[in-house]
Image 1 (cartoon, rainbow, N blue to C red):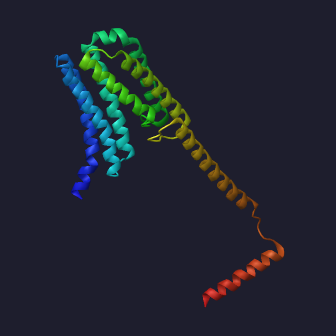
Image 2 (tube, rainbow, N blue to C red):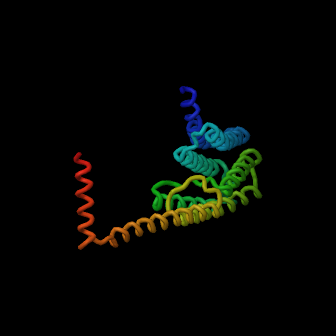
Image 3 (cartoon, rainbow, N blue to C red):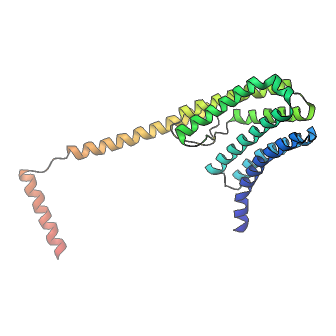
Amino acid sequence: MEMLIRKQHIPWFMATGRALLGPVLVIGEKCGWNGFTLAALIVTALLSDIFDGILARRWHCDTANVRLFDSMADTFFYACVVAALWVGRPEVWASYGTPVLMLLALEAGRIGFDFIKFGKPASYHSYLAKTWGLVLASAIVTVFAAGHAAVLMTAAIVLGMACNLEGIAMSVMLPVWRRDVKTLAAAWRIRSEIGRASQNGYAVSSAQSRDVVNRKPATGASASMESGLCSVSGSALGR
């Protein structure tokens, strides 16, 4: 039992550790740490992001709360990455500052919309989001290790905008919060299933209501017959 509890907590610890690497990255950049050391922190965070999900599914603790916390840890970590680039890589900001700020604004808008509609951030973990995560991590590693990553940075920004637009579209489609929605087609399928279930429930409720309304009280001979049956039943039970 103790081993099971420890396993259930490991994905939480991994996501927490990934989030804490963000401030370490900012401090390291501010203190002039070697670029390869900073790149190693990015790789560590990426591996943590990959394996916490794998372990959570293997140990059957892949709950909605775990997935939501994982998404929030990712957002916080990469916000710290942006801060680290702003602190120590002015050449990157000179080249990509405007599109990065546009991406951050889009990300903030998406999160705000999710809070308004669902009361918490989305946690879709779509295929596009996973692709963006890999390309973004590769771009940041290259920036820290080599000092430039023109193609990868451009691809990461474009994928980031596409990913956020996809997330907004999913949130518009879905009437309720759902986790692990991999594609727009999956979001539409979930919406359709919820709509059909709601319609079926309404149809059953309406049919029951009509049945109650259409039932008329018995009169005349029918009433006398029902009264006699009740009297016979009462006599039989009283014996």
